[in-house]
Image 1: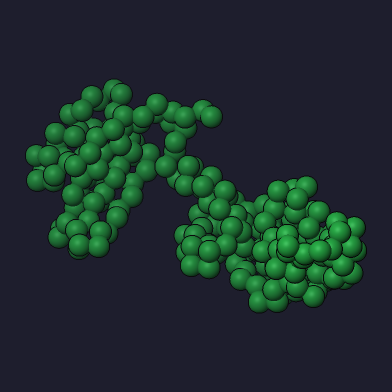
Image 2: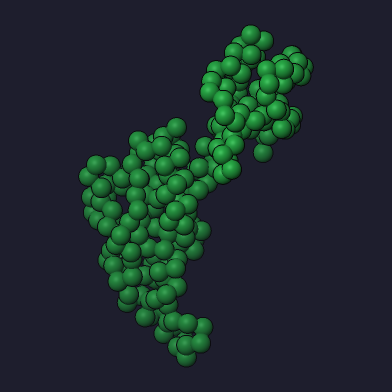
Length: 220
């Protein structure tokens, strides 16, 4: 799955010459924690965050009146406080790459740019949550089976063939390597018409089934 499948293509932005007060009010009205800064042809020049604004704003201990504080904020430009080093991704990057970037840099969203550094979208943590929900098909009723797959090659092919022979379609399959060197595989499939017989086949093939859960499709 790629960024372009989940990003928001219409992005609210600010320019470098807008006041910090304008940027702050825009963030408050939209509930944003950051906004990309672009030039007149949509090239990304920086990013301004709620933390940038907080650092530039008078503290609560200031003797300035609210009017005086807003006057000073109005004189500051976005270019005065924005971060000029911007972490970006491309539309053809994978969502797991984006997840790594968001996690590593502790940010909530990343601008999506083209080869000319022009803004073409934004992708956020919520977009990744949506991708994960779609990958796991959370809107479908299914049985979730987790089993140990340590130190064995060809596990996915072998177990997948069991589902094929039973005419059961696999909804999703995830493999996880644990820190202790062990590994486990989780399969989600609709076993409504086949009962739990396929689980016994997995056990008979020598795999340790560690967890079985049945889910109803989630609508909201």
